[in-house]
Length: 58
Image 1 (spheres, rainbow, N blue to C red):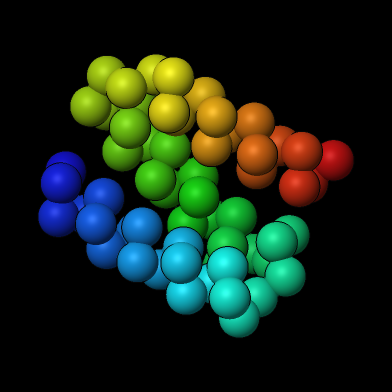
Image 2 (cartoon, rainbow, N blue to C red; image 1 turned 45 degrees about the horizontal axis):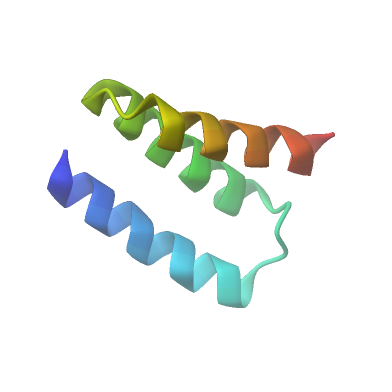
């Protein structure tokens, strides 16, 4: 999980600079990171990411 988390964090940083906040790649990466946090049992972090994605789609 840690390696995947690091790679997704790196992607998020790049996407944050290059893409609009509601772009498909950015939102999918955020959701994927949220799923990793959920698997690790870090529900607070997961919920924050899922809420961000939800607000961007709303």
